[in-house]
Length: 74
Image (cartoon, rainbow, N blue to C red; front, top):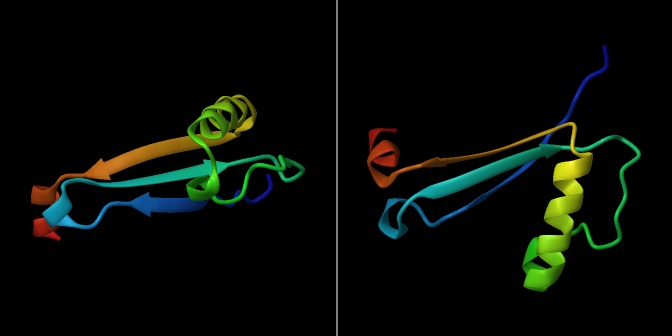
């Protein structure tokens, strides 16, 4: 069995701004799409298109969050 590697990202500004979100996705080694780079540079319609492609092609993906109360405990 080969080794899988997941890229990840987070969004949020800590407990002051509410929950912090994190996500990760594992794509096939040969996966390529010209729009897949920095989601902050994409139009909403492009992100929606990529989401469908990523969900269809991903080996696995996940999204999680932590509430301000959970963050304060850490």
